[in-house]
Length: 205
Image (cartoon, rainbow, N blue to C red; front, side, top):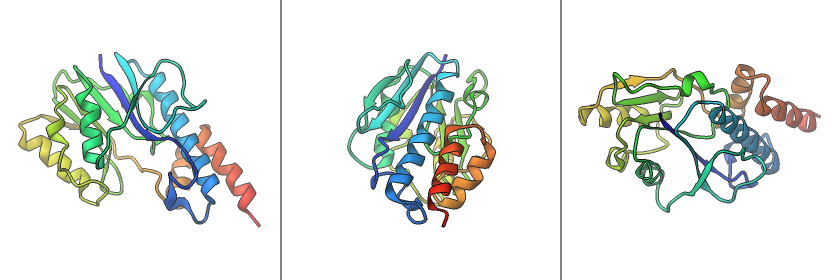
C-alpha cells in the first residue's frame, strides 16, 4: 500500500495564508488554513494507506486526527522540503499539501501497477499532488516552486527520468479569497466551507 504524506504549516496568524489578507484578517486567514488542513487530514485518515505522515512546520494541534506520524520539515526551499519528505519513505508514496480541502479519498487512492508516478496539476500552474512508486529526492531538488511553470517543470523532470506518469484531475489551490469561495462551493459540507461562512458573517458590514 501507499504512504500518504501531507506537508503543512501550523495555522498561526500571520504565518499562513497571508494572501487572504485582505479581505480577511490574519486570525481569520489562520482559521481558514486550520479548517483546510483539518479537512485534508480527515480525508487522508479515511483513505487506505500503509502509513500516514504529517510533514509539519510547527507544532501539532487539536486539528490532528489519530493515526498520523508527525515529522518536522527540514530547512531550505520548498523543493528541498518536499524531497526530504519523500526521502523518509521506503515504498510507494503520495504527497499532497493543505490547500485543497475539496480532495476526496477516491482521488488519493492510487495504484502504481502500470505507472511510476502521479502528478496532480493545480490551476495556478503548480501541483497539488505528487506520487512516486520509488521515492527519489533528486526528482524534486532544483524544481522551481511557486511559479506558473512549476507543474510543467516537475512533470518534465519525471518524464526525463524515464518514469511513466499518470495525471490526476486538476484541482484549485486555496491561495486567494476568490479561490476560497470557489473551493468552498466544491465541498460545501466541509469545515473549510463552514469556516468561510463564519468569516463572511463577521466581516460583512
